[in-house]
Image (cartoon, rainbow, N blue to C red; front, top):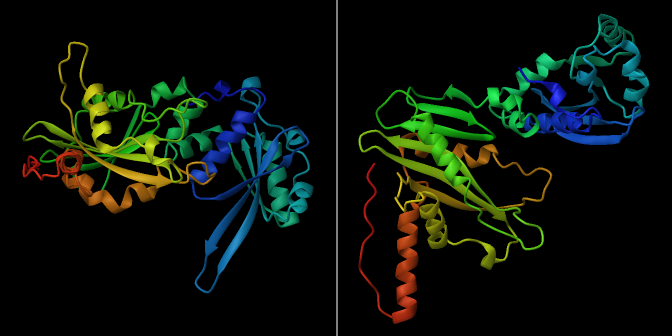
Length: 341
């Protein structure tokens, strides 16, 4: 189980957790001002689509972190729910607490819904944990609960076919596939790929340190006939980046080769890499490192081991050809080694 006592007693991290959870669940989410208890409530806009028209509903989300005291949340700790909702014209109210509400508080919520015509709901620690165990929110466990996350290293879901799987590992979400097997690739091998990929620091700002450039794993395909892997990753960088600060494919390949070489200079089982360069507004509040747009167009490629555009080795070869032309004025006719699928 998740231990909510890992979050500081002041409740700030708990509020941040709930905000990120709501954002990842697809809600338009905003902070309110500082509340009576020193905390900040959240405003959520729920967008509903009907047969005749679209409709929006505003919710007030009140976050109460009491796990450190191990006490249930009482009626008096909830404040003036009706007045708080009226102040922002909220039609609904959700009480989110890291323990559980008392029976008297639940009765109060029911009374408000009946008499004040405000929709009321509550999320206790069990409900929050259920929501954190979904594929799109699983990474938050590793972000906010470093100790509890040790019990949630892997979560794997069968996708669209017997040999195609979606997986959460640490704070990653990616797909797993095998050429022949109905099972996913060996997880120790995937963990090795992740750990070695994490060694690569693809950009360093002298003033701010590592910042805003990401090398993110999206899928691992295992060719069990030839005992080789394909690693699909995205190089995401700020769209206004100086081109000189973006690692080009030949330089990136060198970094990958170095990461997959051990201390004895022995090259380990390096995957064939498929890496897309993707500019993004990384400073935006709406930026999500694992947004579905990075996956949905490429599910068939992930499942069958196809290149999304070109494999990294082929791109590097093209760079070398162009560089040779630039230096010598002569074209070389060496072809890249065909990729075996």
